[in-house]
Image (cartoon, rainbow, N blue to C red):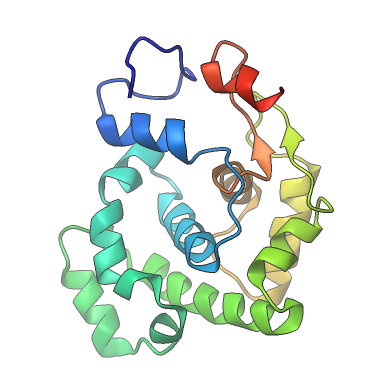
Length: 186
């Protein structure tokens, strides 16, 4: 990681995890099912908090949620919920924990319907990347959030879904001053 590179203004240059996330993940197209699930769960936990808080707890979430094993998460019961609520390394919010389990179940149903969640989420743009900056929601995030809510997902409003679409690279929002902005448009 070069610290002399100009990055998006939101990236805390004092946090190596944040720099790594910005430089290596955010805005890059993701098609891996496990990563798509991980980021969906993490984004839903972000509601009302900063992404940096979630990012700093990412490894704890990965461990607590069985490395995002979809089949295991779908089977979580009250005992597992209570274990997660006792884990001081996580965001201990019962509704968000229950939403993560619920959303994993819906994620699996979408996989069954579309063969992969990747097929589902990328179909909204016909597999195209949208380049836009300085937004927290859009007609696209409205449409995706509405569809996911209709399917029964929780904690996935338009702002959370917009952040999710940025995280998985459907929306590339690197700022003009960022070294990745220029790279993304070549």
